[in-house]
Amino acid sequence: MENKAWIAAAGRLAAYACAVYIAAVTAVFAWRGTLFVATADAWGFIATFLARYYDGTLSIADFFAKRNSVDHSQPLQKLLFLVYARWFDLDLAFEGATGIVFGIAFIAVVVAIVRADTKGQPRAETVTAMTTLGVTAVVLSLNDDGIFSWSFATLSLFYPLGIALLLVFAYRCIQRDQPLMLAIGMFVACLLLDTSAILGAVAIVVLIALRWRTFATKRAPLTLIAAIGVTVVLYVAAYALAFPDLQSTITASQRFGEIIGHAGEVWKAIVVPLGAALVAPNRIKQIYGVAAFWTWLVPAAIVVAAGHVWFWREFFRRDDTRLTFFAAGLMLFFYATLAGILSGRVPRYGFDYFMQSRYLVFYSMQIVAMLMIAASNAARGERSANPFVAYATSVAVLACAAFVYGRGLNLPSQINFNRMLDEKAIALAEDPAHAPSDCPPYHLTLCGWVPGIRIATLSLMRRQQLNVFSPRFRERHHLPPLPPSLQMPPAAQ
Image (tube, rainbow, N blue to C red):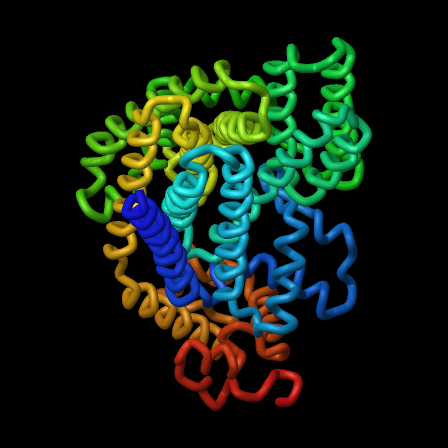
């Protein structure tokens, strides 16, 4: 018996050590391999948001403003952008590091819920350790390094964390029949998470409807649903009044027509989100080429689809616990996100848009939900050992995949790409009125701007010593010193 205890303890230690290793590898990649040179969307924030901050015209509305009708309000991200500019030279490696912290915090919330649910069960400690490993292997997997090579995408790990905290808070309010507190929490979530909070609200409403038999009175569910619905409607209406110019010019019938126009590709809306959670399209492309997409994605999607059937069968067999509510909330949020992409992005960009690397942050939530239910089943001693063996095998497979993905990265190429972007940005700054022909417009978006705005933006960055124009930034990332013509700020010349 004592030997078994030692073996179990060693297994738990190994699980935690593997989880730490996976998180550390991803964190190092997110720091060294991310696009720390200002890239893509960052230039837009610099030219508008930061420019207003430095000239003293920044207002609260700027934190909630969107670029267009399909954009998202990102007040926390913009606040962090100010922090990076003010204290960290606008070094976007810190943005990637912040995203990793959000991811770890999400993992901690999931593990805490599993630990509380399995407390006192025979296999509780072992299952908690395995859950830590399994969820880390999913959330911080380098399955698609695009999430962690673009700091703005890494920062989107804030959304799973925000939804997790919303679900925990919502369950507490539902259990205590506190519709007012639920409405307040939902409004705060809408301010911070915008569209994701609305999708989360849909998930919570569906959960209340699914579990209505657990409430003491027939009135309680309606009151709680009304609290959520009214809050979301008020938020949407208030935003429309505050920013009337951002209303979509595409009608619902036009959206539907565009989707119908691509009806032959509708299957991608199922296969890609399900399969990509295990094997990312970009990873398949890198190893096997575009022709192998469906050879890998379809079988992976079938496996995950079977997991969805199992998940909902288990859901309706279980009591209304916090873990059950939370896991189902993550799953429903995943479904709502797919519906949002289908209605908001597919009409503009087609069904291949589901392959965007940044969406894997949301696709992973379905696997996390399944792991939570499986962990709860595996911990209980009154059931056979089969659930535990199946859970341990699943976690081992996910962990092995995470190790393989982590080993297959080419970090030097990422570093060299950053150096190339730095060289192009410096060359552009030396003659900002004329963008060179080899200026990469996707990454250095200011290449395509009108000269006046480009000159003003680069002048601001030089004056404030931001990003590639900061000596500390260049020293931190082992970049050569600025050329003499750019070492003095414009105001001092």
